[in-house]
Length: 314
Image (cartoon, rainbow, N blue to C red; front, side, top):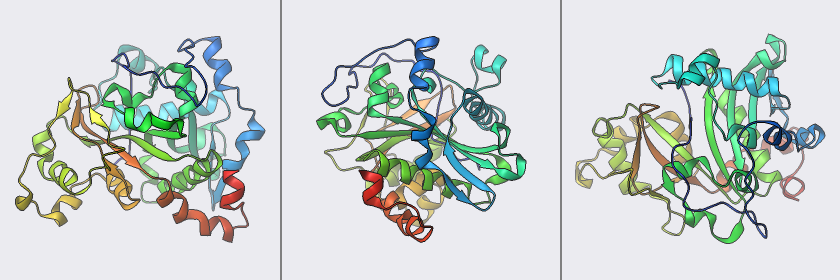
């Protein structure tokens, strides 16, 4: 089963603009020279702290347009060819999954050195969008589906995770773990206080997912002070079964692997689900405090002679 946290083209004008601490929101064009200048604003030598290696696999941030193009090609293969997402004419023609947020994000990639080590060797990817990057376009992708005003309070650094996928030949390997090792380093480097994003159930019928959706509602709601809410126009009730009807073991087994992984890291879900017709999914919003992510991998960093938590967070 493919792993992903999505997605594609924006549809709803945001009600609240994202602003970085002490700055006013800045809007720049979605494509064209200004967007490309923003994407290239971070010198490559400042991206190098995120390199993680294990055997033939290497995790790093995309450094070139070719890297991003290859990541988008992998996303297209997984979301549109393997799954049931419906591409727009532009996406179908390009055979790339892209949207207006891509130029403002960091793209974490896994490469297999046995395939040459270049862009063609990308076998996994995750899209990362920090608060200050979202301020440049005026919003996070998640705001298409959820009210996240509670996450935006206080100006803390928050990180949206999305567009996660792994090549089908690498899903039995530790590719996803490698991506999370890269995320852990990224979180520590930027002193991220909260992680969030949309997780998906395949198929757009919420009743088909009544058991796991109800389980998430009763057992794994995010703390009220952080809890996102599905937009009123898109809200789908998650509480579809009575609590006493739920078999927790069966509900856990019915969760998509990525959502289950977030729960293991201490994550919680927002209030209400959302149907995404374009991707043929039922979505939930997930919030994760980064401690569970960083602590899980810190010993490996120390053992491998890599930098410490304090050095990464400074």
